[in-house]
Length: 142
Image (cartoon, rainbow, N blue to C red; front, top):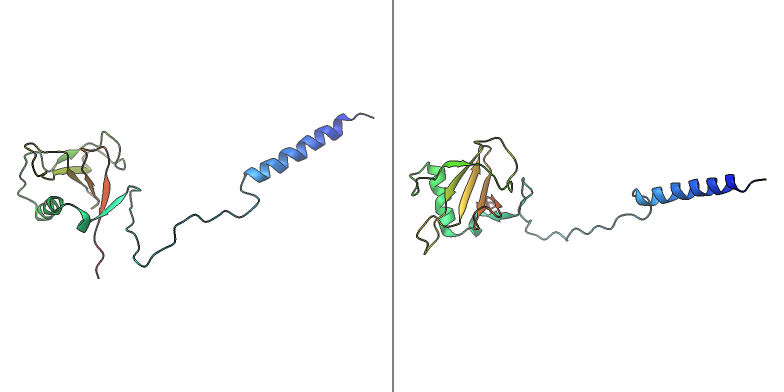
């Protein structure tokens, strides 16, 4: 009588057990979500961090007002197509995004701050010349 078949059977059983443990079997997952507070945090549709309109610098809020009114804009490049070369924003077809300068006090040129809007109504803010973005969300009505 050969001992090989029991070893093969034992290896097969062990493989099945290990596969079951690694595929979500076993103990229930621990919920690591933070407890909700009375004031819900703003949500992002893009997966990027968010900033409420009221938390933006006053110059950015003025730029948002100009965008809503359709101008006039202080810089010739305001309203230009933003190509998203950095690929920080969600990928969209060319021409989807447009950028607007947010004045930076003390800067002689356009500075690093921008508002970028999308055709679908999405709005993003960067204060580091496109390295990072935050999605702008409206303040909740109270």
